[in-house]
Length: 257
Image (tube, rainbow, N blue to C red; front, side):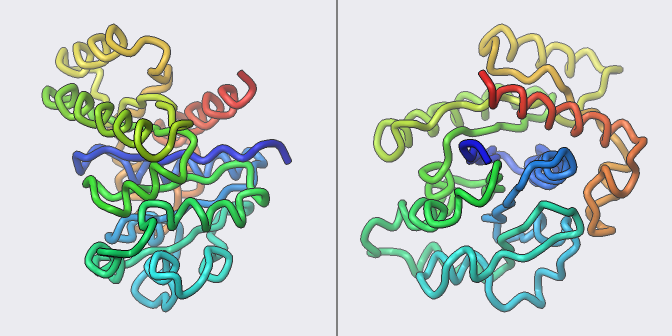
């Protein structure tokens, strides 16, 4: 097993396909033979349920890890995809923000835990909450790179500038190795001029940091989480499945550069 890559998937805007990307990129990487750990760091627990687990019935989650009650290896669980494990989350994570106030080195809790288990994986994918809080900072501090899904809409560029500023702040103060993995466009509708304009403008601004693969609006992709299945198991012939497989291939390609 080569060097593990730890990728935080984040965007401070909600509803941009962040969790959909975390679920399906993790699942496709595992389906391609990689050993993958998905860390659900979002209190909504949608990555957990999207990989076939009953999030509200799980006793030990990332919340317990953040409070120092157990380690990642104590809470990780198998999923519906061979080669993919998940560190689950649920609504209990909401309390972590307050409970960690005053805790020494609280920004490095997840990093220290990831260090203990990272050699067992090719990829660790962290689904961040859609806000800049102590959990997000932990995820960025623990990661090598940040993958940013953005929706093809007018306000996407405004949010992207803020996010890149945040990444640079974390890089300067907490994690000097942190880099931008890339931007992936989601919910793309080729019928609208706006979608095309947003893609072109971001490519002009960021160039090589933009993935070639674009995730389209796709009904089957929207349905799959309610069945607790990633898209390549729910509907392998759908446009959504094809797109995430291509994205996973691009991510693996970057590994060798």
